[in-house]
Image (cartoon, rainbow, N blue to C red; front, side):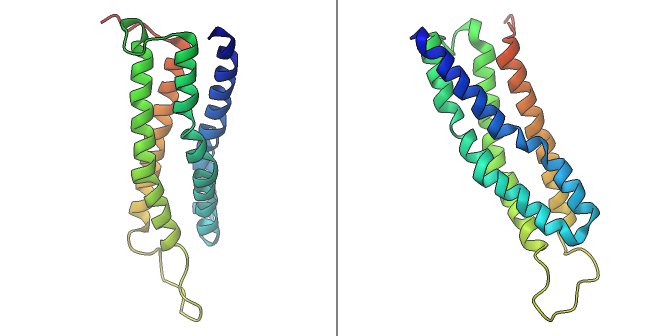
Length: 164
C-alpha cells in the first residue's frame, strides 16, 4: 500500500519526536533541580510527569506505526537487507523495557525520597540515605537510553548494510 507510506511515516516520525525529544531535556531539568535542592523534588516530579504522560504513552505507539510502515513499504524485517531494521527493533525493545522496569521506578523513588519531612519535623541534616545512589542510577540509565535512541535514529535514517 504505497499510498499509506507518507501517513505512516509522518505518524512514526512525529511520534518519535514527541516521545523521545523531551527526554533529552531531562539532564538539564535534573541539573537545575540538583543545583537548587529545595526545588529538586519539583524538578524530578516534572520529569516523571513528562515521562508518564507523554514519553511512555507515545513511545508505545511506535510499534503500531512502525508495523504500518513495514507493511506499507513491503519490507521483510528478517531479510539480510533489513538487518538495520531488526537491530533497531531490538534496541527499541531494550530501551523501552529498561525505561519502564528501571528508570521510572527509580525516578519514583527519588520523588519519594525528596518529598521532605512530615510537617513539624526538623529538616534533615543532609540528603536522605540512598538518594545520591538513585540519582546516579537515573543519570547512567538516562545516558544509556539516550545513546540507544541516537543509535536507533541513525539506523532508521542511514539504513546501513552490515555485510554479514
